View 1 (cartoon, rainbow, N blue to C red):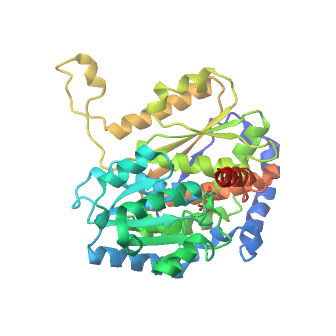
View 2 (cartoon, helix red, strand yellow):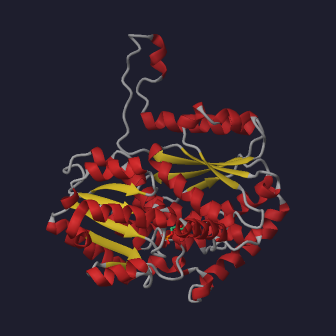
View 3 (cartoon, rainbow, N blue to C red):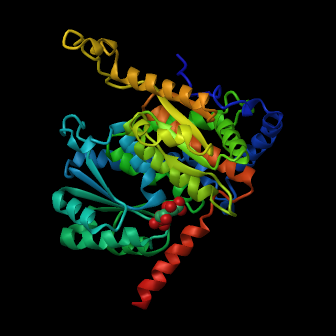
Length: 431
Ligand code: PA5
């Protein structure tokens, strides 16, 4: 039986979608997309990420590693050192699919997969606390950095090296390009290396070993991830806006930006999708924030942020486009017991599922925003699983790349990030 598709509902986009320009632009968008796919072999174009669903060799390599680690049964914990594109994709997959409380589950509930911690900042309290709570002899260290020179990754690695002692490099895997400090260190200490292809940028690297190694080690089903991105690849190349959600998102974002909506709010109704939004924020911000252009991405989680940011969305400046993400069928949903005998007001909850109420809240919020003329649209995932989450992430990657092209900026460079990295190095050297 065919799987259900991710759906996009534009009915609250407040009329912009029927604008003649939208239809005129669709051909331009389809030609941008085919240009992206056609440029995959050109290393300088940085579109190698579009080839990742077909990187069979990489899948074999990652699956072999996961099987080896599982069968050795030597490690309990995974510690991932990396930042930005070298961390957020894996965090999005693992938290999205295993939930943010994965580490609290028993080994049995984790089906033997590793617990995971990410160090993606130079906060001494966090570094110290994580290292001191792990059994370091049972910890597998995965160090991820394409350049191999990022201070927020190298510094915690040096601290971990000191804490773990002589065996540190025997317990390491490096994910990096085929040059640079990490690569040299790997040669010296015989550390296994997974290579990041030169034409895959950090924020587009989730479906390379950068995202798949940590995800696989935490029990994520990589064959379903692959099935999801292969389906996304198929849909993204369809010259039909109804099927091609990436093209539609790009057009929505582009036109609303042109209409003064300078803020793009991504608001999934699921706490598990918090890291997915963090991943999206980096993707969108680093890809589009150039030449004084680009809408600012904002994190909001439903229903939590209904009690925080919704007032601003509803009655503050009308400068936002809100993209809701609904999970149609929540996993392991709970039925609310009927305690109306204890208080009649409880009767309205009785026999509903918790996830159903979350979705009712989403629909209510959409309606409230629409009544206040606040443009919004909704993406609906049939379920939150490997197949749909990876599909959604791939769709957002394509949508971002298309939006960059529509705005006339290069979605694959990050000169503003590089500049701050360089100044940090200069300041360090001058001390
Ligand atoms: O998307 C990007 O290119 C950046 O966010 C990088 O991923 C981030 O700066 C980390 O770089 P590196 O992987 O070289 O350590």
